[in-house]
Image (cartoon, rainbow, N blue to C red; front, top):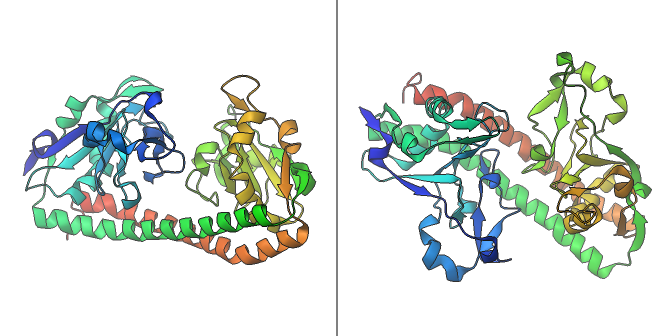
Length: 391
């Protein structure tokens, strides 16, 4: 049967509140910028005090809600925001949705919420969103009324449940792997904090531990410089990835060789230093970065695990180092390589590496598993949604 989305679903706009209402603890607030890589990144969120729940409770998210970004860059762009669809995972249940995003929730007996979530990710819905967005390339708005007008062929409820069950099995495995990764990362952070508290630390500068490489973008006028050979890392690629496995853009072998001194070997540490400073990631294969990232190529590669924990705690210091009295952070190579850090002796660093080499190796394995799970799910999704595969 044909259905109009506005007739069978509830639409809840994100809330609007002033910066003065934010606190350091309380109920997390999910913004469009937190909707990354098909999930919700809660590493950098603001909070609303629990006392404000009576006022803003309508904007609270549930697991399985479909959230659509309604404002952002054009959907045709690689790093688009407008139209981005996210199915809320359990880690974001109970968070509040901020403005410029829309929560869609089934409120009819003929629409299953699990199916609605995958409908939002389908080519059919995403194609419709691209057609109704209005504005310039860097600022598109999708009107609520037009989303309500989206019409589609709605299969019977048992079919909806089967489709959602097949696809959610992949997402459940992905979410479980993400939880395991988070626990392994937190274990490393906890051990790092114990060392800082209990051991004698020595003052160093970052360049004491290896070469500092500032990335560069090859000439964009030469199309042959871009391809699928070498990961080209930008700050958005580093979110939700301890090891930077997936990048929106790749360089060709020719493009990478045009700036051969910018190569980073595996187990280099990338740190964003312009704009959003303090995002940290580890290379898992030979890579290059753009100019917003400084990287450490360690003399002792196994030191990367300790410095991953250390630099993950240095956002405030990086902001202070690169502010120059403005709100825009810019930590150049000279400032970065001379940045002071307090580090234990090499024996303690070796012990840390020995303890966490296996856990970090497991993190990389889990990330690779998730990539394969997402790939399999994304191949199945359109075939299930358009009836190419019967259930």
